[in-house]
Length: 61
Length: 500
Image (cartoon, rainbow over all chains, first blue to last red; front, side, top):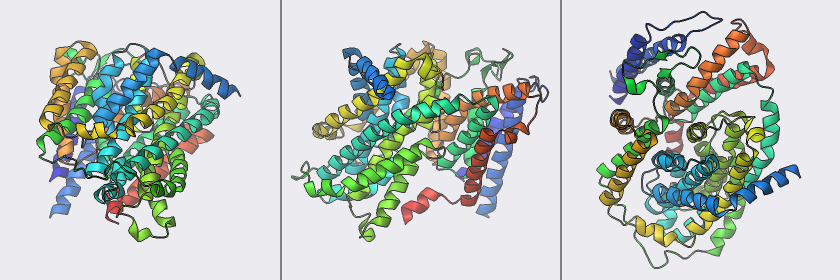
């Protein structure tokens, strides 16, 4: 159960930061902007949260 | 010879009343909080952080912080020996045999061996720091942004490795920390980002308040809300010790020191990995391995020396490369930055007196702790019998006051401290280790900065990360760490070890 909560927590964090980084400039690969890191990392956080949740649910049943 | 001269200059700075007093206050307070059941060294440092920062003298702050750190470690081993309530993973190993020894009425022996072992480990660890610092700095001078980027990726993965979590949880913690670090002004463009429309977030999250909320208060609250008896039962032979035990612990002590000194420097190492390694080695080479876990003095001496040696040598990457490999070193890094010192290869040339004074203070601090712990152990034990509610409430009160003193901003205290305390308590309840978050928070900003710089300098050429030899080396190590993490998957190495 605790893993599910943790998954929800990571997904919430990821979504919140992703929404808030929308207006930030992504930049190009040679000159990455202020939005590059927040967007990428928040997506990774959401993915990790999903993996944790799916694993926890699968393990339960 | 040059090292000796520099070290003497360091001692000259430290051996003044002002710094001796601050060093003493550091080790004293560190032991005081660290000895409290269930409070580990990260929590102790988090609680005492405001006091050290408020000194306003960079050398003094660092000396005090270092003192608090190993004070907390000595204190932690005392509680795990007497009460079997270790505050952190590294003292859990000491608790295995140390507590059994104290149940057998050999608490005096266990405490003496633990203090002496820590002392030897600490002093030899400091010598290692002295001699390794200069060559490390020379190699660090060759590093460009590309090397730093790979180095940081390596130590972020290392922090996932040393935390008790499974790989995904650890990585999630890491990413959360990095996201939190991005709140506030962006270094390159100056734009405010991710402030959620709050004015108090414009300058970013204050590190000291965050760690206090995440690590300090939850541990205090957890103990406070738990009804656990922490009375120390004394018997007549409590403070006596056997010279036989001391003799038996000499060899394990030196073996532990060597293991600790090596494992303290490498990423993914650190105190608890080295205590575990030392315990396993002692068990392997012992003639009576089946007796481990029933109160073997070797099981206390080895891990304790390894612990303190690793605690000293883990300063090497921080002081020479400017990159922390362990959560506690991440806190040290933040403290240095708050006192306007940038650790790294420039530290020894820009601020030689701070560097050598810090190393000299390692020696002085360890000597002070030996005196503070051996003759005065009875005093610390009495402390454990003070009503818990009184003691812990006082700590909570001073925490909040200290958090306010950092920026004189109540808004910060109310929102940030409350938020992170709730979060930290949640992590504590579900038994999840938030230490990768701490490293992500401290290193995340640097990683972004260096990655940006290296891509800007080399026209977005990612292949360069694999072409430069030093960078390739770090990437290979990162891959190995990641491989180990996937190999262990969800199996918790630590719990598996404890069951054995």
